[in-house]
Length: 463
Image (cartoon, rainbow, N blue to C red; front, side):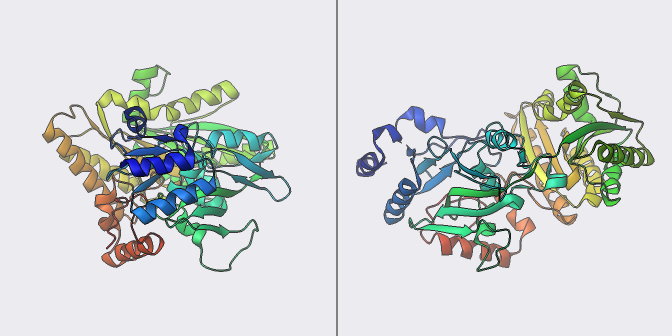
């Protein structure tokens, strides 16, 4: 980064918020993908005005700028692949500005941690359902930029279902407000919807207005054990189609069950083809008991050999332990994990899982699967034992490409919650036509004609 640029930002933000040293550049060079691309500069804006001034300068000088939250993303969405400036929004812009208990909405800055926000609204008897697995670290700005999901999506939906309005700074520094605090708003184009899941390529979000709901009084969890993955997947969509709407419907396949048991020794049924872990909630205990009995009937109809209801908080925590620790456990199968979050209509889950098994056999890779089957979202994990072996690594990537093709064939999508970023960009044309990709690129150019904001992501080619 040229000294003249560094001096400008030092004058704007102070030296304490302008960093070109190797320590800061290294700290902001990677995310959960573990890929590394060092930025030229790291800036800590203090407020929306700082963000506006930074973008005005970068747009005029054609300097790449990359908005960043906690860096917990799985697709490289905030990595500076072509250098430039990382705009770190988590240091100062991390405040809950308002919790409006009369209108059931809240206004927050993008750097607020998801879990912290949930805890604060629950103190007031309210509820913010989106709960990505990274909720202890991930920021709400990042959640909006990636349209994060979570385990409760089966009943409550995902981030986009709770975003009512946004304040954002365009690449030229202009500040816009999209959406309203009102329940109904059909005036103008849906800019809020356009900015959600845009992965920081269109604007920098500086304030978020979120919808809240009343917190349910009761919740109960249960686990079903199945001889085969197909029986478990049939139980998922048939349960949901029967009118039962659980908060969560999570699954672990046999490989994942064995991995968790090897790592933690929790007494899991290692001979099971799959387990389903589910939760229901409501304001009447009788309502919960009815839902659990109905789920039990559906599980048993589809081959479950056991249905266990947690009787207290300790038993509930034990049920969920396996699911929450699945990702770290499967490292018993290899040093490198090619982690994807494909999603299909629930009724296609049996075909998807069978297809993944066949693809894994074809390429001689181990692929444990787990995830949010209540909404058709499966985390596939192609494990590479020896990532330094080029042939083995290529086989893993070839398997992933074929899994993506299968997903699209089954009317699914490349990502249910992680986004596209860098890692899935090469596969965008599997899922979208050239006309659609051109439309995406045109939208990017309309917002960001100089292509300075998080360039090189989502497979966009801006002319």
